[in-house]
Image (cartoon, rainbow, N blue to C red; front, side):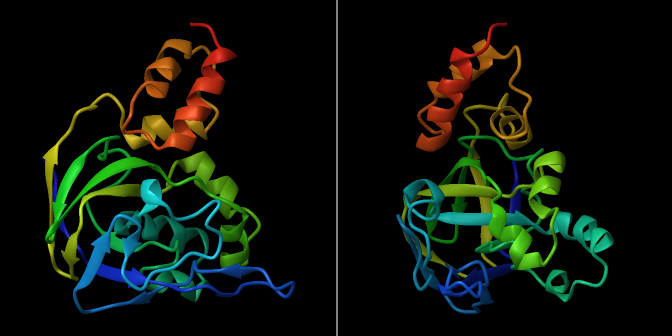
Length: 220
């Protein structure tokens, strides 16, 4: 079972992102005080595009501290990578990489309980945010996606709070495997596995639909 802690808690609000008026809340600021973590996310955190971001399946976003060394090596002159929050994460911590975290994992975090719903699907905003043309492509290639959680029990959380795993119903479905199947192009010949995924209620609704559609095109 995994046990770690919140190294940094971050929130953001929509602000101008491009010259055409596109808004984004990917830029986050650290908060060193208790915040309520409710079913829609952290108190004070907002999203600019509620169609593709936010909601109960994406209530809170984690990104592993461990990945930053890779990104700093790839983009050594990018100051954005010298502190947590570069990927728009709400929680920065160690120990929750895609290889160690599984779909449906349940954690106690502060006074709240959370459940892993899926990995983060990268979008074009990462390229723009980093000022690099290949961030999205690199996330897909490496699987360094980060993770999303839904909230099972609301409660206050704060920087330094322990994150303690309580349950693991699907040890066969690491986020690494899940991301590869749904986003990374590793679905060919995986009809049975995709059908299994499509039937798992803990998987985010959009990814269940994606698994079902992919399953219809495959045969083992």
